[in-house]
Length: 133
Image (cartoon, rainbow, N blue to C red; front, side):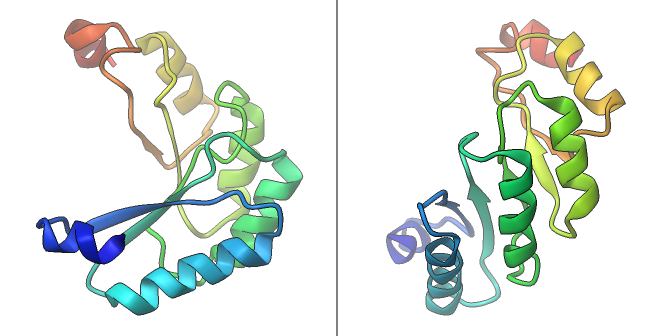
């Protein structure tokens, strides 16, 4: 699948993770990295599947894999938990697809809940909400 994306002109790929066994996630990330090489940007997305403790554990396992970010490791509105994760990991944490306003983004940033944000234009209030954010 990564090779197909690269053939279409993409220079980055996001890997869906969150398998029952964390070692499977590590194996998938390593396999994709081996297949595409170091010149391709890789990220991973947990889709809010983990607890804070599990996100830190799994994030530490992935810290040396050269990922650009770990996306939404826990429930999207647990900014205190996200801050704990972001503080514990070397790999940046990205959240924001579920911000429903510029205020929720401001709250997350004030809590130091992430390294990167990616607000979804439709959820954050359209173009106007996105520009405010």
